[in-house]
Amino acid sequence: MIERTLSIVKPDGVSRGLTGTVIGRLEGEGLKILAMKMIRMTKAQAKGFYKVHEGKPFFESVTDFMSSGPCVVMILEGEEGIRRYRNLMGATYYKEAEAGTIRRDFATDIEKNVVHGSDSVETAGYEINYFFNALEVAGG
Ligand code: ATP
Ligand code: MG
Image 1: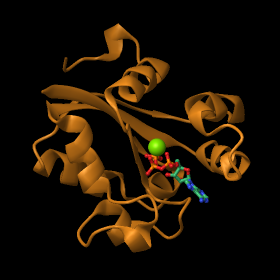
Image 2 (image 1 turned 60 degrees about the vertical axis):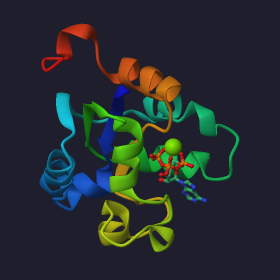
Image 3 (image 1 turned 180 degrees about the horizontal axis):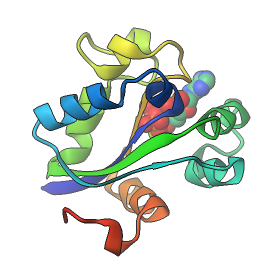
Image 4 (image 1 turned 120 degrees about the horizontal axis):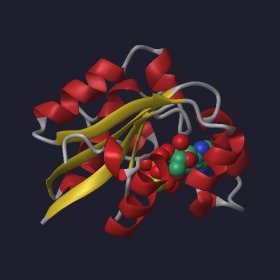
């Protein structure tokens, strides 16, 4: 099934100059970029984005982190796009991520793990609509 997914190069990835590397890897995997922009989330916007994690011990910290600097947000599309992009990213904790994944290669911390990717069709729908309106989906 052709799926859309939301990708974010997180503030650590942008500030460390890893945006191009992430884009190169996802394009190399054959995922198509339908929309892309740089944003800086407020704390409230980061809380809305990570709403599913409200109440978890890391919620305050991760929403501080996500609002600490600019992010690059993208809509990606491809056959099994959600799973294929998650495979490129690797496990949440970089030490558990497979060799050759973005997180294994570049993450420095369980929180500062360079990239985000939607984990289901439902969350992809929510996350895409959170950041993009229909006019911004230039490639779709
Ligand atoms: P993402 O949703 O960002 O793609 P993920 O789906 O791999 O990551 P989630 O469980 O959704 O992982 O956690 C969201 C984010 O919160 C993680 O990517 C990480 O930045 C942070 N995080 C998750 N677990 C922890 C933890 N135990 N301690 C600190 N930060 C964490
Ligand atoms: Mg997640």
